[in-house]
Image 1 (cartoon, one colour):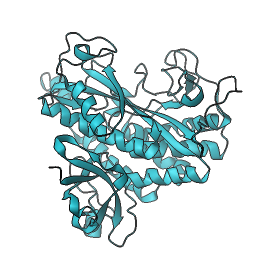
Image 2 (cartoon, helix red, strand yellow):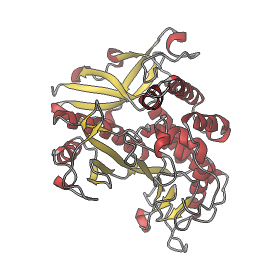
Image 3 (cartoon, helix red, strand yellow):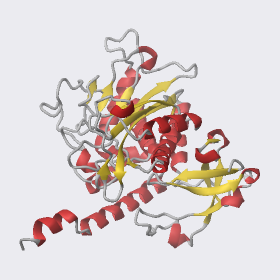
Image 4 (cartoon, helix red, strand yellow):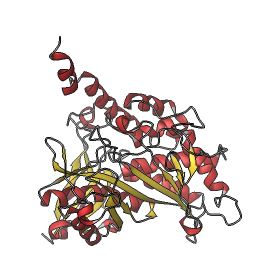
Length: 423
């Protein structure tokens, strides 16, 4: 298998696609030409003006990004790719391109976006039906049998190290069978690549051991959901953290304050990328420590935007709204776009949230209560959209509108169990 490379790319839903090519053919992009297909989770094509059906399913080229080439499971190699039309133009629907463009805009301002992901997921005894893995020795921040008696987590850490995904650690969360992994802090594009690949690696490693895993926003009604927290900062050309201040009483710079203010200004619209499924809004509620209120706090996990207690080189801003179904590249692009607006216009930062935001929030603004409402907020937020690729936003919203329509027309098990027996 060592002479083959999986050349992949993420779609707008965060799912990976691509082709396996022989190593000696890796520099021939037409060898792995791919049809431009805009599909939802139901595998139906989205009818758009320039893509998929209406455009006659044209070809695009997935050209390997050699900097992302790394070892993969079972002796294979894997690499991310950049997407192009056959005439050489970059494909607007490429989420990695969108993040790269946002990073380039920050570069023009003298900064490099830096991120680190914290990713939560459940280990499952069964995917159909959905059953949590039993963890008799569970404890919060447990390791070994206290986190996972199947040994899957140890395998994940070993495989992730082999694949250079730089997992800094894994541990049990508050709910038995739920675990969290922290990924290495690095430039935003590389960080999003690692988060995408880590999600793939976890499921592959689990299935090889006869179990499964899900990053779904809230898979169980009796448990908290799966978050995907994004830690962010900006570095200068010398690699110095530009959010850190030795003189400021709070230890953060005005740049950090304006950045946070931008995140809060676009709180509702950001939910469209951070909470991208119908199920996301079962997690995005008060009491879930999930980023419901449009507020920020100093080392306060009940606030959406948290500035952890560490200062100096490790000063960072943690955005806590996103769940495990978010697309790492689009999420990162949207967050740094919102922060850029705050910096560009020097938006003023309100007072930090003190104490329990759910009991006494210092704002009346919160996330939308459904996927449909979050898409409304995104479409209404023309300022945030101005930083993003027009075609990408339109197609993303179209895919998610179709997803919402399918939910509205669906008849659920709950409805059947609640009503069929008595009416």
